[in-house]
Image (cartoon, rainbow over all chains, first blue to last red; front, top):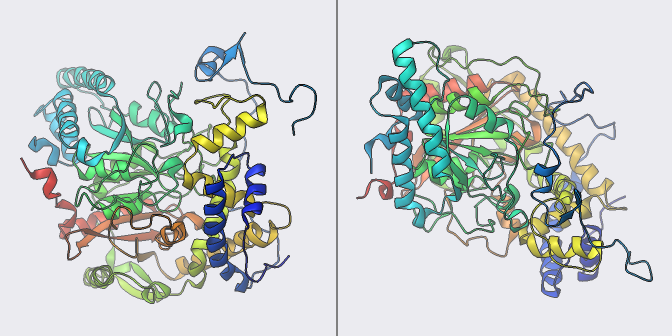
Amino acid sequence: MRYNQAMSLTPEQVEHIARLARLELTAEERERFSRQLTAILNYFQQLQEVEVAESALTPPAGGDARLRADEVGESLGRDALLANAADHAGGQFKTPPVFQQGGSNE
Amino acid sequence: MNEVLLLTAAQMQAGLRRGEYSSQELTRACLEQIERLEDRLHAFITLAPEMALEQARRADELLTAWRRQGGELPPLLGIPLAVKDVLAVRGLPCTAGSRILEGFVPPYNATAVERVLQAGAVVLGKTNTDEFAMGSSTENSAFGVTHNPWNLERVPGGSSGGSAAAVAGRMAPFALGTDTGGSVRQPAAFCGLTGLKPTYGRISRYGLFAYASSLDTVGVLAHTAEDAALLYGVMQGEDVRDATSLRAPVEAVDLSAPPDFERLRLGVVKEYRQHDIQPEIAAALEKVVRQFQEMGATVQEVSLPSTRHAVPVYYLIAPAEASANLARYDGIRYGPRQPADTLPDLYRRTRGRLFGREVKRRIMLGTFALSAGYQEAYYGKAQRVRQMMQQDFARAFEQVDVLLAPVAPTTAFPIGAHRGDPLSMYLEDIFTLPANLTGVPAISFPAGFDQSGLPVGLQLLGGPRQEALLLQLVHAFQQVTAWHNRTPPLVLEE
């Protein structure tokens, strides 16, 4: 698709993006980000003028990536990994429930 | 100040071996200098005096044994250094400048850190950084602003501003930094240092807290190219723990033979000459061009038209990658969490309250650039322009061996200069971003001072894997210039 001529992000759109990104924003932040992201995206409109090939993208610089052999190595161990968790019990990470009691939350 | 702190790391290496001072004396001198200046510079987030003195004690034992029996010594044995707080050091808190990692203690070493420790270095502590390396001034740290040793009202640059201030403030002879869009080179330029950003993949990123994975590199801040080569030399090379690390054989950097200037083709970027640059930086650039010419180099102008779009390309791709990389900070596996009744609320509250403004802004920007209906127009377009830039650079490096360019449009700007205006801060990165977007190595080096006494830095960019050439050229330049030897007055005052 093409860019909108004058790109703007309303506080409502900002809130939608924040929900996708799992970020709680204050009303003040929604206003601020709406203003700042609008300014940034308008500056980025310059990319619209650039003629680019529609050919397939090649991997970015350093296309040397590869996977190592699938061999079992040493691991850090459960205690070391749980040591940094805010909450854990019985050798597992502990979290609040995914769903609220009595209905879907998300 | 203890005079020993004015030595380069290479001189310290020689002095330690000759027994002029012990590693413990050297380490104590660094710790005393930190004690003396840290209130004013705030270069560190975490100090590790006990760990450092223990490493120094072990280094001294090895040095004593070596003087009796001879043999091989690890290259950095007993030399202190500082590590940017986005690289894991086992047993030391690692915050990445963020409240969301407050109290996190990594149970492992980053490969770069493991290699400097294997080489015998002494880790003094973890230096301040913009939160998750997102920034050009170190003002985005959750743990306070770092001040520039040349002028306390100015920023040290960023995001490796803590490492730059520590080295310029002679708290450590050199330091590890990271460079995703200029975060080693720009603070090096603002603080009068030499800063190396290697080829993408040259130094393993295992244990580096990922920001933008197609751009992140580990780099070095030092006083001289010689010291940068010393530190780079031990960190470079393949690592099975980083799938993107280069498989190229490790090349020793030999600075003893001067580069062949008669055959050197130096390129100057045409588009950069038309850019609005502080006059002293433009003048320094022309002067260094003449100096390279006098040393025998051929100079020619090179056109890189796509570089004018570096800011939007970078600030779409890097936030897009960041929005994915930072999804791991969810309040479950590490760091503090905000209380909530359900898991989705726990994510939102923890991330919303513990990430700082710039990090949230980039996550939002990246999430938008990748969202349904916008991905092709924003992220896709940016990737295609990035590819053009890579082609422009490949063509340029057929015509010339290295490119000379400014590091930033200005010298160190005042603290608060870009407050509330993120776009104006992003535009500061225009000259450093292309090396990351194309993956090529670059080195910034001191090339003068402006009228208010702030350092002027320039950078050389080379083709892929040309770190050795860049280091040799800056080393040769530093044999005939003295900009890199100046010390901030603050450091010398009693």
